[in-house]
Picture 1 (cartoon, rainbow, N blue to C red):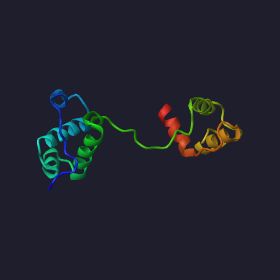
Picture 2: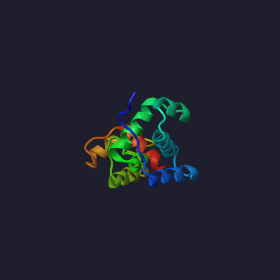
Picture 3: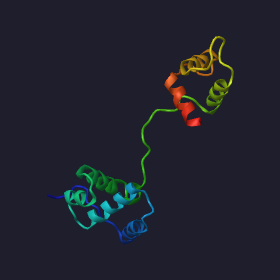
Length: 142
């Protein structure tokens, strides 16, 4: 079976990948990708590479495809991962922490997460916020 994404490495690229592997100081993902590229350039099949590196065939295929499309340097770097934007910016986090350190409302012994979330909305610091976001923010600043 002819491979659609055939990895051909130049001698400097091969030397760079081998040096990266021999140092062993990079992340495990980066080292595995480098080994995948070297084995693919030697002509091993995806199934053989996957078995040798304790990986999966689709992972080897994606690494090979990305190398052909973007180059071996791009394969070694991580792409940005999707995720939601932070609900609170630095100033809003500071307001939350100051509010947490202040005296609780009348009739309460301490602040609850729901009270903090409602107070942030009441003070027009943020339009809406869940108590879970308040919890995560306070946990990371604790």
